[in-house]
Length: 441
Image (cartoon, rainbow, N blue to C red):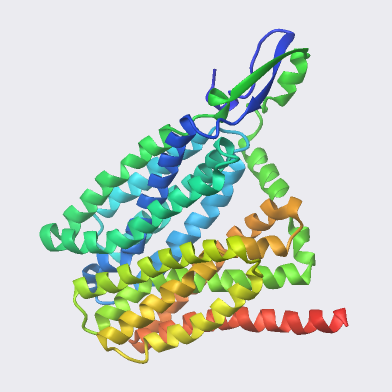
């Protein structure tokens, strides 16, 4: 039976209605491991992008292509991630996930041979980004299907694997570049990323591993047939129909939701661009690759420890996620400016560590902030709008930052632009707070 429709069982008029319960373990642990490897390999090399391609951009004569590649990468990731979430309503985890893994590895293979920035935009940005974007919804959806009671503990394990990759990849990439050069380093990264194929293969339909309680019942086979998707339906019409069903634009009628969506989008873009461009800034200060890798690693360690501390604090104390996000964004503005105000190694190291601590307020809290702006039953639609908006914004903002560098020849103005993105979030939410407070009175 096609695994895409493995949830439909039985051929006769008398079928067995099963009260199926997720295993909360068993094969779920294998799925959890697959999810961990997906994020570890997907985010690891991406976080070391600035170190990996530093010399490549120098050979091209300009580093303005870096934000362009990152913008296209994250834009492709966001858009394909949204479409992948829609596709999962019709196709299985493995079908969607293997296509994503195939694209990701194909992007790796083609990137080995790139000679120009525009080629890197296509191979790394479009192909690799789209591939990773397809695997993210698969991983989250499969994980949520297999775990209910142990979900928090297992997700913490996955987050730990992702954080370990963010910590180790900068040092690993620095070592590989020194020993083997860019092309062979890219080949070795591609070999590591091949494990994503196996990570997607273990994403079995949860129905294959359910704990079942059998109850006899009679169902009409015609009802089962109605549940089957119309396979011969026009693909174009199906895509348009599914997109319309999943993009609930009426949420945009709520000014508070729009304010939240815009603020989160600008802060998110600033954060992602910062991770990619910080190594280039440090290289411009004259730091060695090992010094740059050490700073990036220290920021990742600080981020991991801050996430752990935040989890402990919020376990005992109720925290307003929106206010904490707002405060973290305000501090981020100051830290971005502080990073370009001095080039001393210990100053940069300290600011990077502080930025890592504050960064968890953006990465961890953004879904909670989004949830406060939309009704609980409409959170998936709100998340879809956030993904689309962030993707489009990154496609526009990151190339613009590249233009700023090309025009000024300084990374300082690029970091001022990132601070401005955070400032837009602060201003929008401040205006919203003043208006809402006035209306409330």
